[in-house]
Image 1 (cartoon, rainbow, N blue to C red):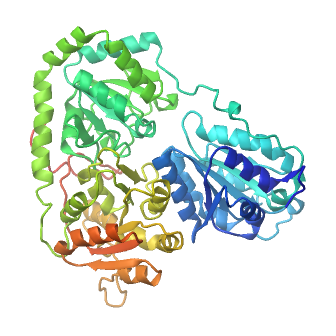
Image 2 (image 1 turned 135 degrees about the vertical axis):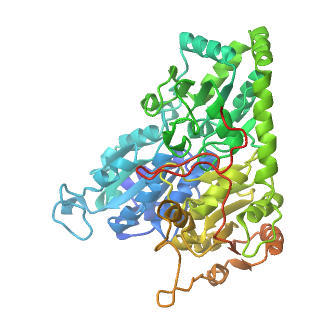
Image 3 (image 1 turned 90 degrees about the vertical axis):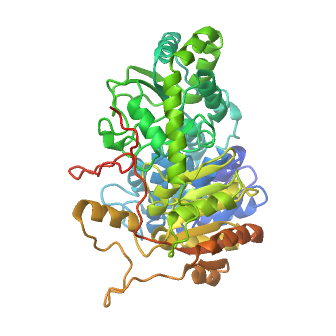
Length: 599
């Protein structure tokens, strides 16, 4: 520990994080970060340290914690493989605009360029910042302790300003331990007195209003950028004022209560019919905080989800780099989605007569999208009580809907399970769907559920994954046991990477290396995940019959213990598809559900 009039590098880092009200750091020990851990021990009454069993788990936990609470966490990893391991999780946060403060240890500065144990130095000494550059908003390396006070301020402000994203601070081993008197205290004035919510200029706002009022078939699309701004109240008010339906991207799912009559649901290949049908048949799109990625836009195939132009696009985003990336805007506005919605509400409040005439003129449009919603609900939820064995995914989603409270948090991993939950799970008021969007990395659902529970200890938190993703990150269960985090893992056990198997079948008519088999016999092989959970100290239940699942979920919720439900799932099922997904030159098949095609 340093002298009273000085602080060492580790103390400067932690005291700044404490000043910013960061409650935890999560990571894995190693020789490169022992100085940071030692300083954390002296601050354990004010700052928590969580030790996990894989660095990716730390990154996914911190990412999910931010998505639920809007408060960032720090991660800590050691030099070499430890820090390399966390890159997937940090990249996941970068793709989805989530805040993580990633601290990596490095070799001592005295050994730079001598290629000691674990130095990444082929092109530049101690060069891990270069390895992290593609995955963070900014990477910093402090080679002296007196550099840390300004770097901490700069890094934290960079993380939280504008389009939120992870930052990286690389600290050589000796810098954690070396002391300096250059230790100014954290001051909130460095960041809190800076306005960071851009708004639309009056002329653009006026043009947007006229386009919306004149539209015959308007639709609002809200993306992850809108979800991240907690826009729900303003968006609902706006949609009700204009009687305009709201679709979301898959990553924006939950931006408003999905049981609201004005909610169409998510777009794209994994989306629902009302939103895809409305967006391919509309004349004006108001897009808030979306980059129009390929999954939500049917790989930009004209007429599948969008047809821009001739449809007119009002594109609102905090990041001007998104304008014109995939569709030409009739009007592009650099603004916070939330601020823009509030501006529209204020401006339209003085034009109620114009609004009323606009709504009256498009009664036929309202009847159309409401009819699509009614028909879709009848068809897509028809299988909620199926009795198939192995268990059909429709039944799994039906039981989840019945068992979980409205404000439950579901952390969805990537795979066949994700396509089903995007389409059939409705995020209700107070609930959250945590998922990996842009990077689509396995582990966010399995590990992120721990971070979600840490952020919202009073809510039911369920991880929903396939057996492929769960096997990659099952170490999360041991962490839940060690830190008394009663997460429930629902594992769709179908013996393989079935979503990719289905792509193989669709594109090539055959499959290879996507099912879990005994090589010598070709027999499908399934791990007993319930037994694995019990071996780690959690509860584990194997669910073979659909009638067992509801009770198993209720028991897991009531137990207050980490629980794994190994749900034996039918792999050979088809769901309703209402859009397309291409991987050029491979073209996806046409939708199998389109009862009212655009003519």
